[in-house]
Image (cartoon, rainbow, N blue to C red; front, side, top):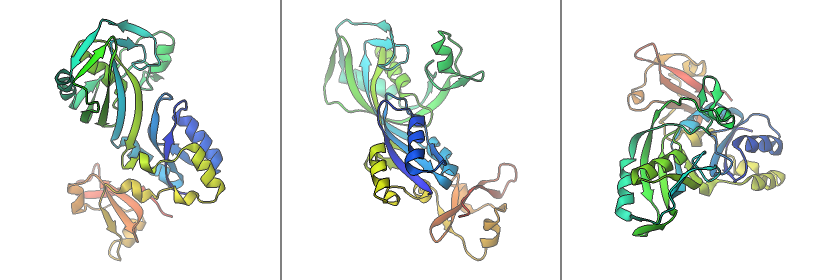
Length: 301
């Protein structure tokens, strides 16, 4: 069993819970997820099975799309609705649409974020949440992420109340914390804030419409139709050029040899060599030999 299962992770489960359950349902050990989703978050979580686990990092590194509800007026320890309140301003607020759009505009593009204490980022060999659970605060590394687009989904002209809320859609790079982004939006508006809810609607090329729940996977497996929902490895590589292996390069590529660099690698960071459309090897520019390329991943079966 090889391929990618586009799973819809439901609220209340960790990403690891999903992998554990799928190993039992699919009766295979080689299963891995492609980017952690917090238990309170639901959404698209591509699962790699068999040989597809070799490209899990590609899917983890791919851009993501989310829809979030931001609440202005209260900050929490975890930066989402699960945490304890650490700051609040419950005076009546009236935030105009133009004020909000200006704040969103300022946070679009490359921005800096400091990961929340309740996160899986490692500092000195320990996860930040391990420090946080002990009440310890450590210095956290600020990093750059990219917000490709930040769209206001509500039509209102004013957002009012003690806790003013609104919905946004975010397309972003790997490593972006949406709950931290919610806090940053609040800072731009001059108020404490947190992320009230979050849904991941896309991960790389995978979207909600292709996804199945764990219950559906179990039903499909019992019906013997699991091949209908497991997508081939090639589906996750569609953003890279495919080159069909021919008699001039077959022996070298099948043996995973270093080759003179292909012209397409001047415009792309990866190319895929295939046999009758099936991916066989992913080549990248050689890190030390200029003018050459090397295989990064191979799928010999």
